[in-house]
Length: 199
Image: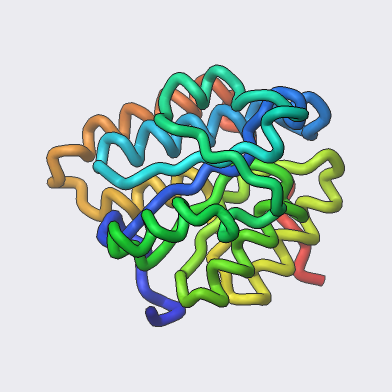
């Protein structure tokens, strides 16, 4: 894929990483991370984009938070920090002919970063929705996003992802997508997290 190629719904997938309550409890701005992750899951479902969800060591860290769990199917357990060691994730990406993967979840500098780097090594284009990923410390999140951008990942926002997936205002799903964005923007008060400095 070209670095400038738009990441539309064609060949797209959403990977929701480790959104477990025990982990979320210490995540900075977790309400925003959960809300926009839910928004992207719902948007993916509107457009029939495949969604996969992982859980880090669920026996010890417990299940996915209910707001996410209620929307997704199987939640795939893992012990490695990156998701590419989960055979089903890689098998599903191949069988669905996925070309680019959008990542949401936690933590930005550990499981998100390692998954993004591994996916790029496998030849996938990776997009990270900055307002749908989090970490315990905001600085770790900011540095992780900067690192991933330098490595070739696309760092975007949930709203930008939703409309890039949708692509056209005359598409039948556009009204539902527009309503979804307005709903989450209203519920979150239009707040946005800090953007990493490029200095």
